[in-house]
Length: 459
Image 1: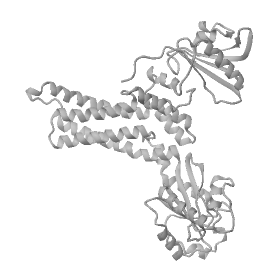
Image 2 (image 1 turned 90 degrees about the horizontal axis):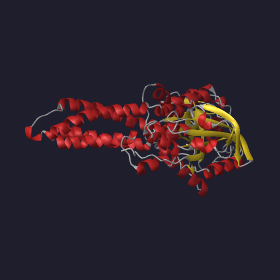
Image 3 (image 1 turned 45 degrees about the vertical axis):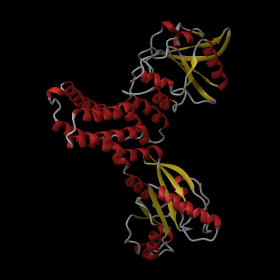
Image 4 (image 1 turned 120 degrees about the vertical axis):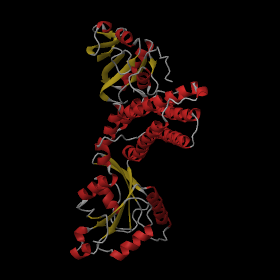
């Protein structure tokens, strides 16, 4: 159950990034927020001003002017936390912000804990727990797609699906609970056939949400994409081309790359984690051998593999042998025939039998656009995001959905085995509990602390 006792103190934090800047914003929230600022503000009487208004003036410590500021008023419940909120926009000097915060602390404010503003917003009913967690995802979003998913969740898209599932289960749970009150009369209020149909339908919806977590992980953490191939195939040159910077050392000497080099790039709104690896070959060089072993480890963890080969010095038979020796796990891969600008038409034509093959020149960046488009198609990111499908990106939600799925499966098995209503009710209650944990309809102080302590202080 959501805690009903809300804090009566007023909290304060720097809401903008620390360090020097043109402007810094200090945020206060709580019953005394307006009076505290008004006590040191020289300008209009803030306590007599309307909500959602801006006021220019000075903040003074006694007779000493600390700064010229603009004060923004948001009177509860029409504010982020549903409490009185004041935001003081001052000059972005760390010295000034420190002096202002110390002044407000002397006025009786308390330093906010991590995520406490959003925690208060949740406790005051501004939004549910899943939406509150999406606020952190929105702040952390670094691409168009992660931004879109976070916005959808913050505006309640995911929560609406969970609440709809829960509402349907509550109806049948209440009917079965009613049966238990009349157990001696052997009556049946919950139609078992309708219950089976509902549970089957809910199970399909939960399964779809669970499957979306893989895509959610991709959006949140990036697609781990390993660039592999023989020494001197052009792997480091390709990495530099994809990143549009000289990240890796490029040399004509085979075996230049001896360790894993990793960096990220945004392609079509999706983040890819490109991993350049040591060339795959047998070697007596101890350091290079360690690099080759690390390459094989990265291949096992990859979501996508780009296998690069030199079209000017590799025959189809050699390429087949390389791929067989590679023993790729069940991971999507693309074959990249590099140095097409140096190849003859005959050399290119001999590789027509290979699927998922793209010819390019990492040095001149020819074919790079086709590769980037193919990368997006391989991940199916555009299809997943542009549709109406909800994407699960939060591990806590995923774990609760897994437990919900297990509970629903127990209900189906109970119906098959003719279990009595009390057993069915127990499994339905377990599913309801897990769904309630996602939206915060059921929660504990430990759960809230675990979630909101991961937020930044000023949010």
